[in-house]
Amino acid sequence: MFTNRLPIAKLAGAVVALAAVISAVMLSINWDGAEDSTAAPKIDNLLNIMIVLSSIVFAIVVVALAYALIAFRAKPGDESDGEPIHGNTRLEIAWTLIPTIIVLFSGGWSWKVLNEIEETDPNHMTVSVFSQQYAWSFGYPGKEYAYSQGVLHVPVNRQIVFKMHSQDVIHSFWVPQWRIKKDNVPGITTTAVVTPTKTGTYQLICTELCGFGHASMRAKVIVQSQSAFDKWVEGLKEKVPPDLMVSVKQDTETNPEPLERAVAE
Ligand SMILES: [Cu+2]
Image (cartoon, rainbow, N blue to C red; front, side, top):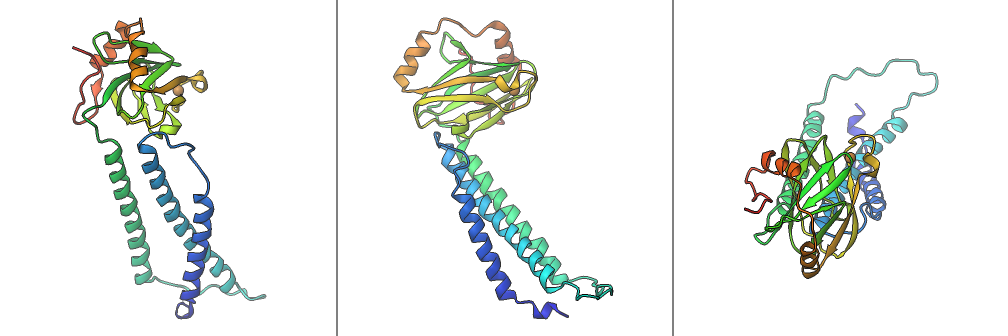
């Protein structure tokens, strides 16, 4: 049996070295750009952990494959069949147990991150998001229930709970620098929680293929100081149109602990 002669220490060393090189290269790339919300560093950190785990798994596969190709290759002229192998209980336990631990660990960590970034702050502001082929519009709280089309304004350093509605097909709400991405689904209200940490101008992008005009379904996002935001909302003349209010009232709330509806009583 050649299993006893496997150079385990050398193979393990090769796995560690290869995983380190792949991780170093992959982690040096800034995959997602600027981190402009409180959720962004946590999500990027989670991605980095997944990159390292994947590098280790990939290195194990590549080293095992390369070793098998070199060490067990047939001698020239050897036409005989390979030795029949029935099974290896220890190996099978190991390759079941280790991936199980990896999957449970990454699932647990993701759960923790999701819990942290979706925790609502009592001082949050609720903004309604309306999506339809191929435009975005927004409703802001307060008695007037102000309405803006194609441009979203939010205050900086304040948690925004977006209550999202679709008038036709599935759309998806995504501001890359905030990281958060959430589907807008007809008939239900979905929720996205974001705390922007930098002022500036961003783009809201639809990331669910929703039809012919999908690629151009964008809106301008302006993150500004609370006072500048208040002044801007004050100046809005339009109110949310009645047909959009219907979706606010009739969509089924998906959040198990419903946050307040965006409509002012
Ligand atoms: Cu779309």
